[in-house]
Length: 80
Image (cartoon, rainbow, N blue to C red; front, side):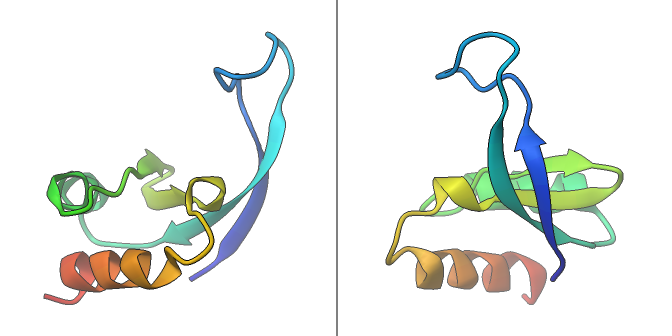
């Protein structure tokens, strides 16, 4: 999976006009909206966004020790 480095636009916890750097995992799937929906409905829910037909996961939201939980959630949705 490609790892993208981008500023996060207009985060809620920063003053207007400031961006926070982040790391994104970009996943190419046939139906990104459906994959994002299934991730949101999982347990635990995983929030992703769609940009340029890619499913994007913001790694700033993944706490240390949660990587395996995220991997399992992605595997359940992407490799049923």
